Each structure stands twice: as C-alpha cells, then as structure tokens.
Length: 186
Image (tube, rainbow, N blue to C red; front, side, top):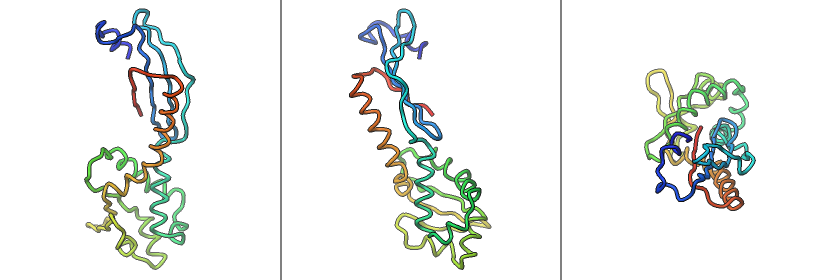
C-alpha cells in the first residue's frame, strides 16, 4: 500500500491523505481496520479501532456441516466423531470454498471412508441419502464416493456470513464516512 501510494501522481488522489479499509477474512474471524495514509510523510494513522466478528471460514464450515447433517440425519451424524467431521471438512470444504467464484460449475465433495461407513452402519446407502435432493447427486467412481452439488447449493452456506460482514462494513462506513480504498485479504 505504501509503495502504491508513493507512486500515485497528484491527479490520482484528490487529497494528500488516503483513507483505506482492510477487511481480513480469516479462518475464524473477519477483522476490519480503517487507517489514513499521509502521502507526504508516508505515515499511517488508525482511524477506527479494529472491529469484526466470528464470520470467517469456520462459520461457512459450520453451515456446510449443518446442511450435511440435515441430509444424513441425527442417527448417522452422531456416529461421526469430531475427527471424522474435521477430515471431511479438510478434504473437501476448504477446496470448495476456494473454488467458489460465482461460477455455476458443480462442486464435488469426496466422501471419506468414515462417512460412508457411518451411513452403512446405520443400514443406509449414501446414494439413497442424496437421491431426490434438489441440486445434489451421489456419484461412485472407482472406490470413491462423491457428492456432486450445484454451486448454488453450496453458495447458500455463504449467505449468512456474507450478510454479517456486509452489515458490519456498511455500519462502519456510516460511522466513519467515506474511504478511498478497500483491501480484502485472507
């Protein structure tokens, strides 16, 4: 940011001070800061104390888990240990979150051995669980099972966290006034 501000010509900014917001979307939290950068002295001043909330990646993970639990039911969900869920999330959800770009391509989630075993131990079939669910299909390729879902199904898991972030940023902007730059990181 300092290098970019240093290279701007006088006509690029109307003021000597650049007010910017950083929205850091982390794993657990989203942290928002607002600073002024004085272009002449190249100093930074905090305009608003850091704020934010627990709207990071784990919030989306929780929404995905809740969605899957709603499909598989309590009996099967209880058979999955915390480590089983963590493995399912590690194998699938982080990759799926990174691929979400507004595209309409389907998203595939690999079903872990523990997941398939929990379903079978409950006397069920993974293919049967996902049959008839709008926007989802089960595929078995080789020795691996996959849930293939339309992107809009996974997008729903982002709606509430995004609303929280948007509401927070809008409220902060109403409090501090205009800014010239927003940096979204994480």
